[in-house]
Length: 461
Image (cartoon, rainbow, N blue to C red):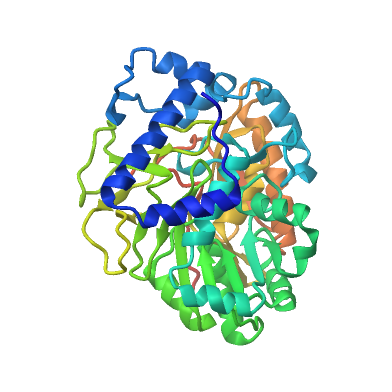
């Protein structure tokens, strides 16, 4: 079969058309797209050809063996369907940070992710993949249409507080658009989540966004700045992502900035998995993604019960098929009707829980958002996995797992130097980071992996 190509306009039309279909018609579309993806993967991916060798043509979804990040990365070149690409070429391309947002071989945007298992994945996004992800965001990302209209009236000025310095989905996507359309620099911008909060405040004040985006933990540090008047912006809305948004933080952000606050459920491997409605329910984009809540053994979990993870099937990335791909997010699937009127099934999420950490410098508390520390350590490529553990006002330890060919001490020394440079930017010169005797580990109960952990006691009053 020929590779399916979908342009941006067509993707928007398909999204709109799906929403007007009956449930039976929608189910037919999903099944057709799944079978097209499976057929393409079997014909063009040696990895899937081997995996599905005993799967018949008249298969059910449950007949397809699940896959996971570790196994796919171990067989990366057999997995991707473009045989002109090697992982070594991709890694060499990503060594040059000026390539962030640029297309590899003129065809593919590259993204990296680590996620809650702590193991990195390199993702290829072809034009069809990017167009479908973009269409979903255009058509469904705003819970309230009036916010979109007001944003347009305000010139659509949008800024995101994202991790920079790496091939992360948020930053890379914005940079790709700015490289393709440099005249949009007055309308679209990114400020680095790695910067000191006061510098972020300066950049936000200068830009005056109509929409503010970013990780909840970074935006939380801006609340006090807005309330004190140091930050003086008036966004139409705040759009968070990348981390769990608690009800408490949502309310605090809304009151501080006097605007509507919402979030979405996304991942690099599938784009926006689910969009939030006015009831704060995450409605699955079921025309492009199949979400299966399962237990630890990948057995189905019924609606209304918490799953240990999900199996995600991406129905639009033909270059790098994700079919029944394990995502270690604990969710509850709901099939009861939602008051918002959206007929798609919806999810509630447990959330990702990296900690905001804080240290003392000359008696002053300095808070650091977890994504900033994560992004700093993520660029030490000799680290396979890591955990940063804040133990006291001036002491932290680092749990490391090196890539093959490096010792724990060697990668720790590199990581410590990167952290010292990062902390110095924030005015912290007295942090003692030591190598932990422990290896990075998942939480015993939930199985989730936290990169940034706060174990210290509260500061004395």
